[in-house]
Image 1 (cartoon, rainbow, N blue to C red):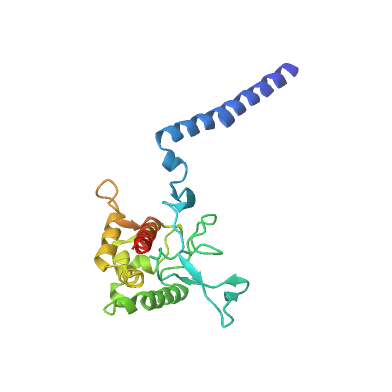
Image 2: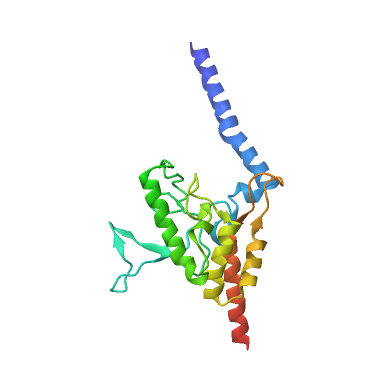
Length: 226
């Protein structure tokens, strides 16, 4: 009996060390050498400061201010609105806030339900209100699906080219940039189809907005130099 217990204890110790310590460390080491970017979550940094991930969506919002000039709240939650200076990500159904990386989820609403219809109609109104002042020809028929529906994960970091091209009119106007220059930025941050045939080309929103910030800093530095 004692011999069997010793054997079992020794086997437990060996397998714990081998599979619980050595194996994870080996895999971690290989991943750090072979593809460190992907292994560390494809972190995006600005001036050495972590600002997000290339594979996790991010919201670009401002607080809604009340009549007293303070952020408005509903049920203890600050109301947010889209920051018009930035390209906006795909809608997200995560809670308690959109693009919550700790709570990846989808809305779980049926495609033909009343709640889905109501939510889609609200997003369409908001999209038109945000973008039509800068492109009067924009119609409901032109709004891409990804501007209205949330992704399955709620963390989609990319939007369609059509979505980005529509938003480019607003961003260019508010940042006092030529529309052609903003569209070139969109093209520069557009990824191709996977393996050349799977999926559709898409635009990484975080990387695109960081490129806009770099242009802003360059223009500001040039103005000070003059």
